Each structure stands twice: as C-alpha cells, then as structure tokens.
Image (tube, rainbow, N blue to C red; front, side):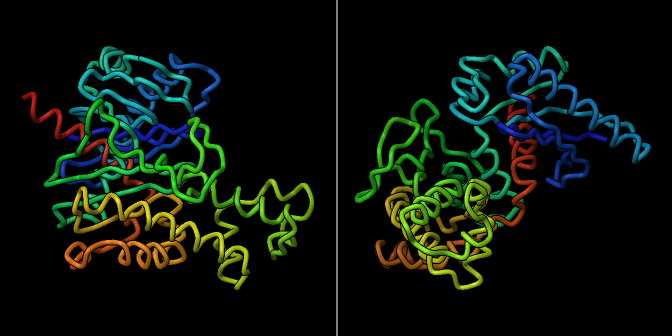
Length: 326
C-alpha cells in the first residue's frame, strides 16, 4: 500500500500522519518537540515518528505499507528547493539541511516547506478550499502568516518569503514586536496578541469577567479560548478585543485581496476556533475596503480540517514534489 508521510513541526509538539494519495489521514501520532535537546534530536524524532507510524499502521491493517515520500512543515524561513531550514526561531535552527539529513536517515525522498504554506495547501486542496481555484489562507495563532494557492500551486515570492501578513505595520498601533518593528498586525490580532491586549486593559483598570475567572497572578493563565468564552457571556472587554482583532485582520486582508484576487479566504489556527467572533468583523471591514468587483463572489470561511491540515498539506506537498521527479 503506497502512502505519504506528513509531519507538522511546532515549537511545542510534532504531529506525524500517514496520508493516502487521495488526501485521507489514516494514522496519526503526536510527540513533544523538546526544543532544548537541539536539532539533531528533533530530526531523529521526526524520522522515528515516521517509522513508528508506518509500523503502527501496518499492524492495524495487516497490509504492507510503503512510504513513497515524506513532507515536513517547519516554522520560519525555509528554502524548499534546497531543502534548508534557513531560520526557525522557535526551534533555534539556522541554515540546517533538514531535508538532506532526513532523507539519508530514512532512505526515502523528503521535502520540506514552511508550516503555514503546508497548512494552507492542505486546507486549499483537501479542506475548506476544495473545489476553489484561487485560495488565500491565513493562520491566526501565536503569530499570523498567510499563503496563496493558485490552481493547486503555492506562491513563494522572492527568497520564498511571501505571506508574512502578521508583520504588516498597522496605522495607530505601537506595541513592539519581537521582529524588531512596532505596531505589527500580530501584536494585536494573533491569539497571543489578543490575550496580551486583554491583560493590558485589565491591568489598566478595565473591568472584565476574566478577572473573576483568573484573579491576581492567575491572570497569567488566560488563553484565547477564555476570550471566546467571555465573549459568549457578553463581556464587553472580550468583545471589544476580539472585534478589534477581526477588524484589523480585515484591514490587512484588504491590501492582500487586490494583489492576489482570491475567491476564498480561509482562516485557520486559533482564528478558526474563534469562528464568527472574528470572522464577522473581519468580513465587515474587508468588504468595506475593497472594490465591488473584488467583493463579488469572495468568501471568507474557517478552516475545515484545523487539526490535520498541516499533516495533510505536508504529505500532499511531498506527493506533488515527488511526482515531478519520477
């Protein structure tokens, strides 16, 4: 049975899945990344997880499993053609020949790409974007990033750096960003940015039900999911923070839409979990800032396979790359 391995590597966890040629995830395992152990240990863990998944699936099905190729989604700047992780801040990697080393270890073709691109590719081809030709996807999580899929192909741009939507500097914002700029979109509209803004406003004296849930030092435990819960209970601060985030996302996307002209925008990550709490103000702001010709037919939807999109996209990306070499 021919199958493809897809691996989604994050700063906290690594998820590995086996995916059929049609894009169905048939086996999935998850392990802690353990960044502190260094790149050699992480690469070995990725390789071991692929082998473990193949053995486990074969045991379940009783069929001989042949992994045709593996795709790895990595955070940060990636050179997919050279197979090099140029810079992954969350992993502490710089100029690491990840594809070459994994290929030698596993003795099978290995292809790497940026994790947001593989996530969006998975959603565009086998999730909410299935049946659409021009799909712009963004992930709203710890940070914000985007990718464009046109007719089944990812867009990369010069030096493979297209899609860093979270580092658009927004008028009226001034908070410092770890990237070195001030007022980046993700300092306010990412999941972590929304939590940070809510904490800041409460510390400045604004009342919220969140203070009852997390009194005193426990406020450090606040999560984006808590904001959604407070929003649903009518908390003014939570509603204000999330509506502002949605509005800012719509404003940033109003710049991307005339450049890419998508027919569908997919919002994934924590943004997909927030649903209409973010998407309603996003659409309102976006549609008010673009020409009617761009608005016509343009849809904005949450990711359909939020948990598996990175695995599916990595595997199907490997399938596409592998097919071009045989």
